[in-house]
Length: 259
Length: 70
Image 1 (tube, rainbow over the protein chains, first blue to last red):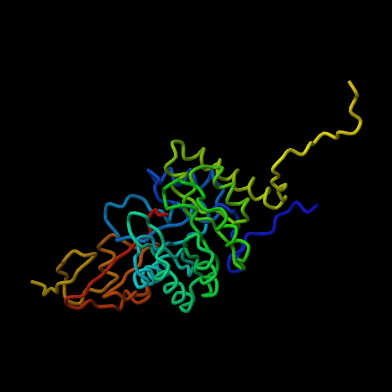
Image 2: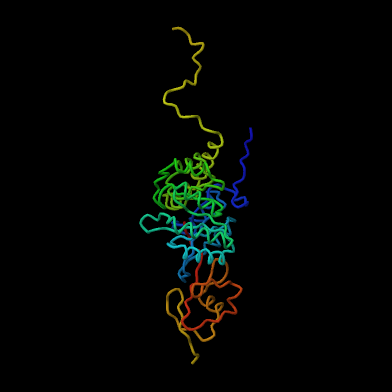
């Protein structure tokens, strides 16, 4: 039996942990530092915003100190044009051509706008970016993003910050079944069992933020998520038993006493 | 009095001395080091060019920084 897992590779780079942590929603930099450590994550997302003299502490310093890879996002962008400019600024600021591409349709749902997303993905790939798109749980869009040259696809389980879990597990399975790049379940995770399910469905990794940063005890939830991702990954590799409509005895019937 | 030009920094109108370069501007905002990026009139200006980039009247400067985010 081979117990060693294969490495989690994106664009040929061994990312490390299969739990990617968003840093949004944490009440302080100290909490970010604590949950990064407790989660064992190797890669964290950041957003790009106007510099403001009142900004206290530097997220970059915290993440550099923790030794994790920084993945800038394009959160808040509504058009391909905005997302591309934000990615270019992030590349300049953080010296990375990796980008979590987010192009959302509206504030209420924060659902990806598929037309703008695909447009932005194609153009960023052409500019040499390693594009990790936050996408709908739509197998066809996921396929199109891969064809566009994205280095991973990151379907949502449910809307960002909703904590509703994985609303359409079957679609996630369909995406996984035909993916030739890593599938990262991004958004919607509420608690540890959601993260475990994502991995059981065959996802290569999970990206979450609010579930940890807004938990009552963020550090404990960070540990729970690390354990859940690991458990789900092991279960996925182990291969679950088929579901049956009726019982199947686990104790042999042969040799029963006649009483 | 030093002649000035009007520019916008992160959406706020400002008067700066004629010939102000981007590196000076970013410094006066207390912003140096990793995590910062600058765009002028919608175009990213690479860090290496900040010290030779002189601002002109009416230019729109965005100074961005990495912050906590999803």
